[in-house]
Length: 145
Image 1 (tube, rainbow, N blue to C red):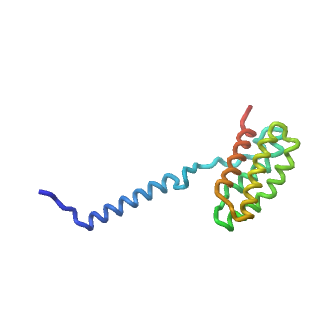
Image 2: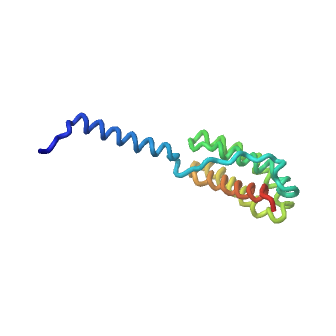
C-alpha cells in the first residue's frame, strides 16, 4: 500500500528546503566568496623607510576601499575620498625605491576607478583591484624581513 503525502505537507517541506538553501547561502557569505578582512595596520607597524613614508596613504586607501559601496552615489563618494590618498601615494613614487612599482600600481588602479566612475562605466572589479593591490603592498611593508 502506498502512502500519499498531503499537499500541505509537501508545500511546507518545499518551503523549508528553500529557506534552508537561502540560509546556507547567507551563512556562507553570499558575497561571491568574500572573506573577513584583516584589521587596518597601525602606521608604526610599517617597515622604516619608504614603507613608513607611504603608510598613511596606504592605510587611508584600504579604509576607503573596504568601505566600498557599489551603489551609484556610494561609489562616487568612494572615488572622491580616494583622491587624497592617491595624491599622497603618487608623491611617494620618486623616493619609494623598490616599492615604487607597487605604489604606481595602486595609484593607477585608483585612477582607473575614478575615471570609470566619472564616465558612468564603473565595474566592481575596479574597486577590488584597488583593494588587492593596496593589501599586497601593505602585507609586504608590514611583514618582517
